[in-house]
Image 1 (tube, rainbow, N blue to C red):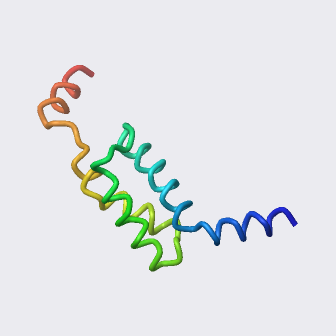
Image 2: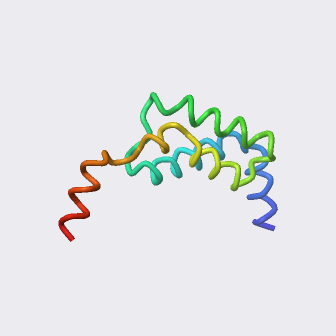
Length: 86
């Protein structure tokens, strides 16, 4: 019975739930907190997920393809220096 209530609540608040999950996943993926300039990306990911019935895989793809995630790489010089220390 409890599962039915949870399911109904999640269906009723899907956009809000998807936004919070997306923010948390993006925080983990970036290794930093989500900032105000990241919110348009979060909203776009949730919008795309809505077209696919908020599938988890759509959220993950949106994060992986997002500019903040793609641009969150260490400079080449730092990677080279780190590789030389091992």
